[in-house]
Length: 327
Image 1 (cartoon, rainbow, N blue to C red):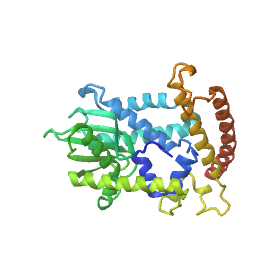
Image 2 (tube, rainbow, N blue to C red):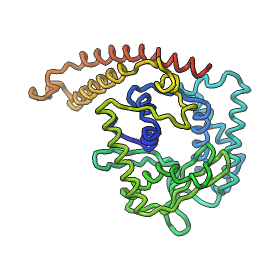
Image 3 (cartoon, helix red, strand yellow):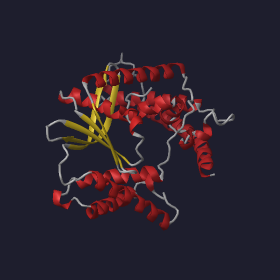
Image 4 (cartoon, rainbow, N blue to C red):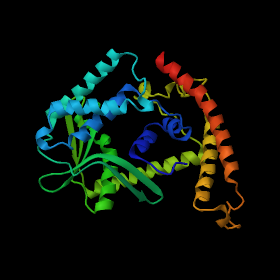
């Protein structure tokens, strides 16, 4: 069972519980793709932009920040060998610079200083631990809080905008609990088509968001208890990494249940290690404690064996996913 929930995880479960299971229960990690790498690099450039003096916040400097950010990002393991050719990478980079040009066309970064950037927010609601990262938080001329999120994709039609604000409503709820102040407005900046969507919010909006996230959390707990994570066919299925192993599209989809059992066993053993680590010396552990007769090396060996089993199963499933994705 997961210990924390982010708005993105909640949205994933809401869209398709089976996708949530593949990613968070079976822990089949989706490899980073070009779109995600672009979003990461663009976000970093926009964050770094506000480290500059106002007079230096121009398009040329922003482009240089993008190049600097990509130099750092591309060196990480998950972004290594993302492109087959230099031309592919160059085309990708040009597209990223276009997104930043679009940003400069819809917002003037020389006219304000953000209150905070990349801010961790976390809090508890009943038995739910909720956490996430805000792209930006501002204060407007009236002194009101504004929560801002960058989107590298395309904005929906205005009449369909409100569901996209679900994550920001949750952030606003956590900010209110932490600062005692309700943000006045939520802002989504869509870079693909140079669009800004805003939403004024009230305390009732936060009450409704709290009710919705607790309902989602209740459904997640029930899914864990019953091991029932149904696949929900929707308009996003064609872009889902897990489509090749989804029972809706593959009658011979591999069974991932063994992965769940292994992951749960590993988690339990890791918790035992964490409990042992609370004591400087094993001799300090009370004999009546459940971990009093546990051997650290033996637990570690069990974890290593389970990790090896898991890796073998994951390798075969991820091989299938890669083959299907490239075909």
